[in-house]
Length: 407
Image (cartoon, helix red, strand yellow):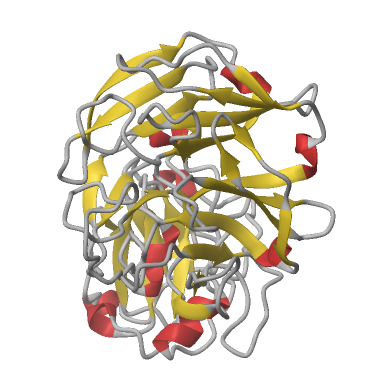
């Protein structure tokens, strides 16, 4: 048996000025090893390479280790959290920080192979071992008027919802802070989107697809950044759809609508919002070929004609296309630019900069490289302009790695 002791992303180390994190070496278990001596719910360590002899255990943070300082030779993590092993005492970051994945069953164990650990911290997600908050950093400028979308708490500032890998949901109001608005369970959803008011109460809502059932749920916005009770708006079958995207008002009836691509046919469908919350009868927008797109973005009004527009990324080329919104339809596409396959996801956040133009934010994948940064987990903001397209992107934050989606 062995334990996989993984390191966090190098971009995080660079951002914090840390030395490069190394991967802890795995120890082969001889027959006499007894890592099962570690109780369930505890992080344990031994002074030997084979997890025998005197055992250290804790189920809380340990800023100092006393007689166990620099003594760990093998470890087992039977908690439900990541164990962050700091070379520094008091959970410091001058030295290396190692992460040990949770293994409640106690089937894996291994060891650093060196005696450098001076403090231990238990956290919910691996990104927190790097000294980051469980949520990413998000800042946005205030706008002159309340935006049509992208503002869950009504403070005239573009905000974001982020899901971490533990299935928690975080509200980012645009001032760099984050608030927990969903304590868990959100990993049950395999599609999350928001873009306006679907329930008709004047507050922005969230739409989510349940992976196990294909049901579609509307989570009513509270007006404070959290979401309230959910309403079933699709009883099943929604797993047959790709790219569920809340769009804004395409039908011209003053209500937000939903777009979805049918996996089997590549057709693009419009599901109109109604006065009561459930979606109306669908309308065909595109007769085929939409499976060639691996991202649909309900962007807002780019061409300044008063109607919401659609952005779509072409998977094979990385090109980004603008489909101008018409009443109940989308117009002929216009090329915005290429190279967009280096982005793992997009955020339509309205006027992020507060200059009156609608902006686009994107989170990079591992293929991203520029003079601003490289690798996964960078947030790049593309400011809107008076004509179609964007200004050059600006790197806003390196803290968007290790998440499970943002919208």
